[in-house]
Image: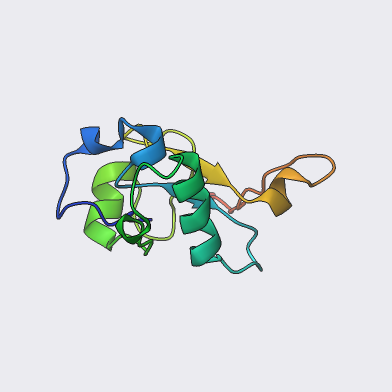
Length: 111
């Protein structure tokens, strides 16, 4: 997600984890992202030192996503990212017993 800081930032813009331009947000496949809840979380994380208007979360465009993550659209994972981007995991995923992560499984063509 684009945290709305500056246009076309360099990758090091992610170095301040509590006030990054970019974030990876992991939610369950069937869940909806609550943008306002995430913005409030970041505001609280910054102890009010950053004005609320500074947080406007939206999906990154495909070019920025690929440049920052190293993955093409539809294949972004939170592991092996090209840039050190802060990762937030939904509280619903964190409460799963056992804590697990899904993986897409494909079939390789055989000869």
